[in-house]
Amino acid sequence: MISRLISIVLLVSATVFFTACNNMPAKKHGPITLGDSSTIITEKDPQKLLDLVTELQPEIPEKNEVKDTPASQKKPVVDTTKKGKTATAVTTTAPVVSGPGLSAEFTEVTVFIQNLNAKIAGNANLQKANGAVYTLSSGNINGSIIKVSGNVTKVSQRYQSVIVYKNGQTSLPLESLSTTTAWAPLNGGNNLYRITGLDAASMDYSEANNNALRNALSKAAQKKHISKKKIQELLNTIKHVKASNQKPFTVVLRSVMWKIDGKDAQGKIYSKQIRVDIPL
Image (tube, rainbow, N blue to C red; front, side, top):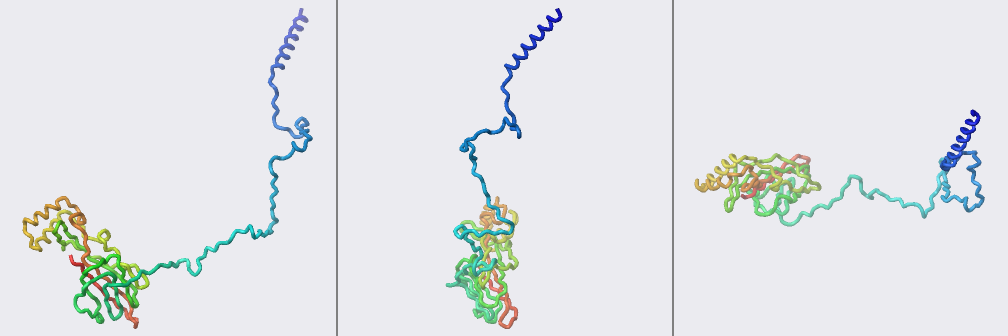
């Protein structure tokens, strides 16, 4: 009985084993193992054994070995240096200063300001003078060129601006709201200097609030002997004005001065001044 049971168990086990083997998936090969004969390529056709990637054969020169490049393959050398110029030199075309203008001829130096038509006050002979005063007749001062002849070391500029009330036919300079600047050097070279900073947007001016503007306008109107009724009308036009450069007020150039410093032929230091007043 026992032997019969053992035979049945062995039979069942063998059946299960063979069934499992038949249902196992096909084995997938892993990485090729060196020395494994099953992975050796046995292909003998030389056409099928060719490498599809072009073999690189770099030419590596020996140390300190320099090979000449054929002339046809050499890149042209571009000379980036500027012939006849230094690195800091800048060539500019000097403005042409000619035609009509204001001319002040001192013993040590002659000063010419292009495009200005002005009338001199006092003696026109400036040989022994240290300064001259002119009244502008026509021409734009800002942007003009000052040309000097002689040994000049510096040209400086200062100006006076004033707040002017302009409304219709009424134009009143407010004398109490004028500003005179300090001397400032003008940029230039080769005895040529350009006048700048005299436009309304660039000039310094006296700042004032509404009360100060009303007082200044009232004083200017009284000085012109304007009636009280008219003065009140003028004051009514600036009720909402908060700044001295706000309409109907504007910043106006009243006078401009230049100082020319240098040395004469004997090496003596001199200083000459020119002032141009602008009628308001």
